[in-house]
Image 1 (cartoon, rainbow, N blue to C red):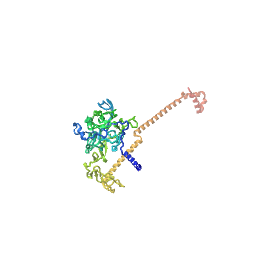
Image 2 (image 1 turned 120 degrees about the horizontal axis):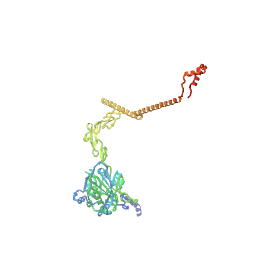
Image 3 (image 1 turned 60 degrees about the vertical axis):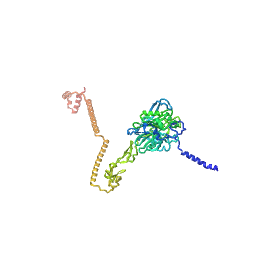
Image 4 (image 1 turned 60 degrees about the horizontal axis):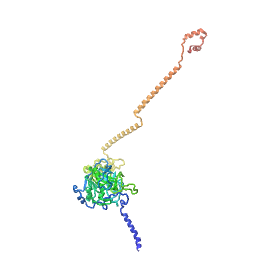
Amino acid sequence: MAAVWLRFVWPLLVLCVRLRAAQTPRPGLDLLTPGLDLLLPYSGAHGPAHSHRHVRDCQPLVHGNSTHETWRSDSSQSGAEAQPRVFVTDVAGAAGAAGVKGPRWVYGHMTVVQDPLRTLSVLEPGGVGGCGLNSLSPVELTAQSGGCVYAQNAGFFYTATGRCLGNVVSDGRIVKSGGVQNAQFGVRRDGSLVIGYLSEEEVLDQENPFVQLVSGVVWLLRDGQVYINQSLKAECDETQETGSLHHFVNVVSARTAVGHDAQGRVLLVQVDGQTERRGMNLWEMADFLKENGVINAINLDGGGSSTFVKNGTLASYPSDHCASDSRWRCARAVSTVLCVHPRRCEADCGERGRCEAGRCNCERGWSGTMCERAQCERDGCGAHGVCTHDGCACDAGWTGHNCSRACPPGSFGPSCSERCNCSDSCFCDAQSGRCDVSVPPETNTSLHTVGQCLAAQMLKSWRREVGSSLEQRYLSQRSWLIFSVSSLLLVLSLSLSLHVFSFCRSSSLRSGLARPYSYVPLGDIGSSVAAGDPGKSRRGPSQSDSDSEDEIWTNR
């Protein structure tokens, strides 16, 4: 009987155990992984167990009953969202510091954020809902999903479960709240910066609610003075995984902080290091912030969590060894992130506006921070409309933000929202939309004048187009003139050349035909004939010419 019972019950027990294990949250970090740089302020429950009243009673009298500082934030709209700075500074080393003694060089990043109300956000790990899922995510991934230009890790978390610790408000959503008395940094809806200790009622205040809020541990600077000793009294000296809270303050390690300067600009500060080897302790961090003009500042999660990302790319040097290969260093998956993004509007601009440079640019006829207020409440809608919550509701045949314009041709109805459907004309009655509308004489005259005007303009435009095309296809007047003169000069040159050639040729021919001769008078020729042979005088003329020619022309 017992064997049969075990045979059926045992599988059910195994199934229940597996289901229970599946419902157990996955641990955020494997604490047995070698090379983790853990720097935890508390063991067990996070934060002090006492009330806010205890914190108020323990603080110096000079601060009265106020346990936090409020500062008006910067609201400048010009320039970039932030100015990142890389620093390498020498640290003299504080007395009683745990870890490395003496002077050393420290490397880190300082990002000065303008207009933090519109450019700074607290993000949950991996995006919205990350804290509710107890998930952890590297700063790189959270920054990429959140559209961050610059980002650094922020709040603490339980290393075993990944649960977000302290208060968290992200873009106006209260993610996590409580009465924990650790140092807080937040931005309220009116843009004021709040740093210090807050009661649960102040965290949940709805008159001027927080739009961003994150918890740290240890208030570093208050009103420009180091506030660490007073903070230790307020946040209690509890035992932690790496020692007491005093050890957490004094140990040299990688650090992360947030604060503001006198202009209300937020400063994000990240220091590279490794616990008890490199970096800063909180005393040195406070002095460094004070030297750089910070007024109020708190310490955030450090050690292996300290991370800075620029444009979605890791820019800092993490201290955790990679689990896959201990020769290299890898960024840790962390909880909340402080994100610097392009300017956003304080609220949703709705359907009647768009966000530009952090402010809502409303459509005509609308105003307000969210473009929710119709201007007709102030200006009215004239004689052809009625002011409603959605703006002016114009009568049929009228349109415009104040119903002062008649419907253009082709439209009709209330606010001219309908289109004419006439087959033979684009005109219809502006009120009813009827197509059988008689046009008044004055309208006909106006249409005739408009038609003439349009025809004249079209003719001028056509002539300009034809002229420009002719100018492109044919030579210009000046080109024709140059071409004609050049042709004429060429013809004249050819004619002159031919004449010169002809003259030279004729001269050479005449010089070749010239022959020397002697002149003999005809009387002498006749006497010689008579004396020598009288019979010759009776010959014919051809014979006399032949004989005389042979006798007269002689070569010399």
